[in-house]
Amino acid sequence: MTTPLLDAPLLDATGLVKRFGALLANDHVDLRVMPGEAHALLGENGAGKSTLVKMLYGLLQPEAGHIAWEGRPIHLPEPRAARALGIGMVFQHFSLFDNLTVAENVALALDAAEPVPRIAARLAEVSRAYGLPLEPAREVWRLSVGERQRIEIVRCLMQDPRLLILDEPTSVLTPQEAEGLFATLDRIRAEGRAVLYISHKLEEVRRLCETATILRHGRVVARTDPRTETAASLARMMVGSEVAALRHAAAPPEGPVRLSVRGLSVAPDDPHGVGLKDISLDLRRGEVLGIAGVAGNGQEALFAALSGEVLAPRAEQIILDGAAVGRADINARRRKGAAFVPEERLGHAAAPRLTLSDNALVSGHAASGMVRHGLLDRGRMLGWVDAVTRAFDVRKGPRDPEARALSGGNLQKFVVGREVLRKPGLLVVSQPTWGVDAGAAGLIRQALLDLARAGSAVLVISQDLDELLEMADRIAVLFHGTLSPAEPVAGLTREAIGLRMGGAA
Image (cartoon, rainbow, N blue to C red; front, side, top):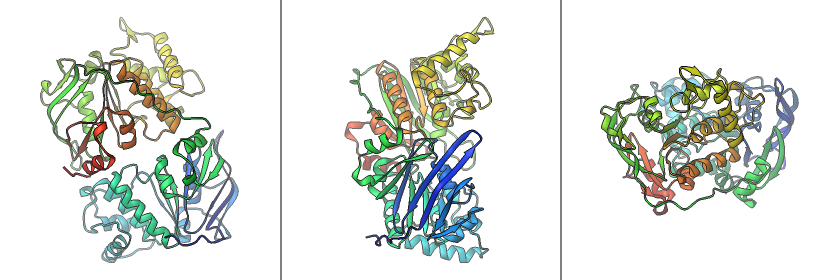
């Protein structure tokens, strides 16, 4: 039971404006958070959510508008000033040192110097009080991703915040860990603390929050009680139009195996990494196979082994359309009809300073006819960019900009579309909709599903369990480098998959 909301807001931001060059990231944004309230901040990628909370935490300075805390105007020149008032923030990406202990990592983040043994005692007390168990003396590299997130939350709570800002807090958690986090947030609110919650998982928002402020193109477009909305209506407010549901064509009759992996083991590439242990799977024509798992359980190693960035010990451990390719490099696999979309779009999937046409060449030169008799076919390269732009609604200024000029969602549509339009026999894609808005995510998922139903085999590695349940025909779970048998989605529950993501047999 939460404490009754008081009449006076805890935080009241009015008319906040922030520009980055010609981009107006926040356009006179108002945000009011009450004591004890769980308040969602929603919007597409590029809507201005991150810019807004960075101003509330002192990482950025507004160019206009003002912020009041408990009715008093305040200036936040740096995060230390925000923390001193009682504003804490848990970022989506962790900032932890793997070789240090939990207590040592917490000590580095606290503003006041304090002996590590005393910090360890306080840490143990706070973690017990909020149901976030941690061992202060344990090295971080030994912890699961869920445990690492607990460190971020506990060290924030150790500074006694009145307002806790959480950015995509469940993106790396199993369903069971997410429920544990919700219980902790309920406990925090019962003490009169407020939570500002950023998430693209709209059902979570409906379960946790009683208020939502929705941004679009840097402006507030709606304020609502998400409990009275549906996930679809919230998405419509975020995007400004209906977000189409996936169209599921009937699965084809069981087709031939296009990808077969047998007994694949790969050593990790760093002392704290996770390799692969005796991985086996079959992927058939017309099928979408989902690989679920919490981040850091061998997903990078699996993608690298399937793509040819890391070679298998023996050629016959990876069979592509009947050919042993385990010792073949990525270009040889592309020539045999495979395509690959890595998790990191800027730097791995695309070179930031190259144009889109040059980036199309990087992955397409081996199998897309962009090189003829040793010469680049610039017309074909630009035509490929135009085709992807039309098919995947890639929004950009010039016809052929550098990759870094695109927003994250538009670059993701480009790198996925670049491979899908090749109509590969096999597509391996990692985190296909990571960090993209609902509209772009729907377009990408539909394209992958359509590709499979047209006869390709599609393997999707994703931390988003909702995404896999929506798209996949079968799901297997990767945990500490081992892969569970793939099972039909129709016979699986979120709870069963979540248990396997957490290591249960």
